[in-house]
Length: 155
Image (cartoon, rainbow, N blue to C red; front, side):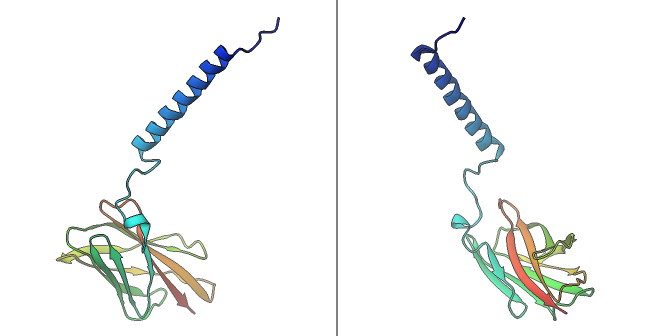
């Protein structure tokens, strides 16, 4: 015996679907799957910069951030890094990853010196590529996405 679908049954199915979508949306917002407000830069503008002559400057909502490397970019040698942050910002973690080739995750050991100045070091692995592109990802406290500093090493 076949049952005919009536408008009454369609309306109930539609109500259940709308309710499920609404509950799913609320759950996604509360779990952070869909961000409500990203405290990063306005519309994530200027969320990255390219290291030029050992320095990179980036405007955040709170002010200017500067990343500096001491000396030439060489693989398998310790490289000193300094990060200057606007007041009231802190670095949660920093790491380096290969951009054009997987090179693992390289930790960047940073500690706050004084007044928003962080210093530390890291060591890049060597690569068979003659030109290796890297990304320094700096996760700031209270920011949803990391600041990305791009740079290149050549053999």
